[in-house]
Length: 132
Image 1 (cartoon, rainbow, N blue to C red):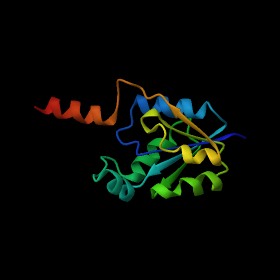
Image 2 (cartoon, rainbow, N blue to C red; image 1 turned 30 degrees about the horizontal axis):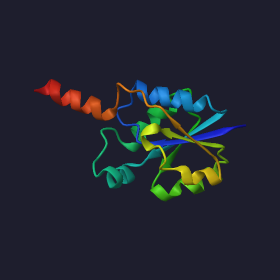
Image 3 (tube, one colour; image 1 turned 60 degrees about the vertical axis):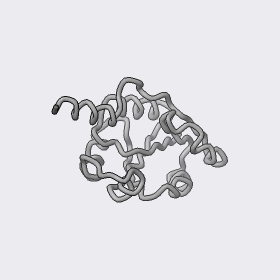
């Protein structure tokens, strides 16, 4: 069985997220999604998410491409996760290109092209514009 892992916040889930998850899952047989906890997301982005970790986790678990959702608590856990979950391929959006190449010593690393016209940041910006 070929195992894939990807990481993210997945707040305001949209079709760009679904595209990424579908394409990641197509690279193997089992997809693990490491979902940033509320505390970790606050540290790395210095802001809170709209949906809580548990709400985001429930959303991800309902997607057929996702086999397992685990918490992402810190940047440094990636090597441990790859080893613990017997991961063959680490997948991220290409906006992170080169950032995780150090994992190539223990698994394949793939950067998938993002869906260009959509992002959580764009949705938030558009919503603010609509409020005016």
